[in-house]
Length: 219
Ligand SMILES: Nc1ncnc2c1ncn2[C@@H]1O[C@H](COP(=O)(O)OP(=O)(O)OP(=O)(O)O)[C@@H](O)[C@H]1O
Image 1 (cartoon, helix red, strand yellow):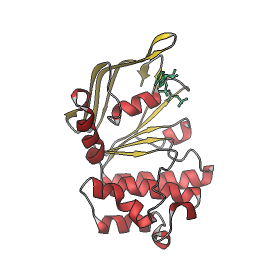
Image 2 (cartoon, protein in one colour; image 1 turned 180 degrees about the horizontal axis):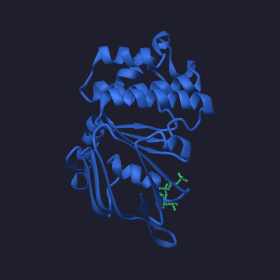
Image 3 (cartoon, helix red, strand yellow; image 1 turned 30 degrees about the vertical axis):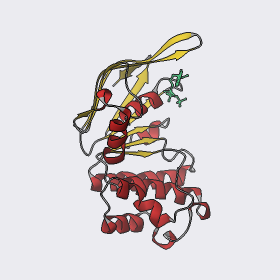
Image 4 (cartoon, protein in one colour; image 1 turned 135 degrees about the vertical axis):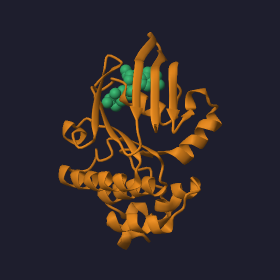
């Protein structure tokens, strides 16, 4: 199992009192599987993604990533898990402006201790980035930056990839093309994917779909 959430509950303290966002969530993801997470605005999708990324810990239940119970870990333990086991693709690309495309592509793989120049070259080729390797992020279009962000995550070969509307700020044709490439390369890397999306159309392209409503999962 790449990701196991067991009876997970999460609440926030707000000015109006405690707000329960997730209740008794059970969710598992195996290697190579992709899962779309949908739900209305405010239903808790980002909260769940943050728990699955070991960026936050649950108030109840447990979260295990590649067999490691991250809900019981210290912040530095969770940082280690994020560095080696989790890849995150956000709608904002979060590329490093002072590094070239080539250096951005290999950055996370180096941090994870899994630098693999042959795989990075293959990813660059498949993502159409080979002619752009010497450029800086500001010299790229939005779609090109998104492809670098996806390549950088795949390059590190994390067992778990989390994505939040990864093609949300591309037009539909570009978004579809980037998503098709992403899913194709994901299959090659055998990573599991949990993707938040508002698009039912994109969600249908993944292996499984679940919806968050009232703090619970509707399969
Ligand atoms: N740090 C926080 N403190 C207090 N309340 C929070 C915090 N983060 C999120 N919330 C609340 O928790 C609920 C779930 O938020 P979350 O961001 O997980 O929803 P979402 O489904 O990702 O929404 P969207 O689709 O709009 O991004 C919302 O009501 C939000 O206001």
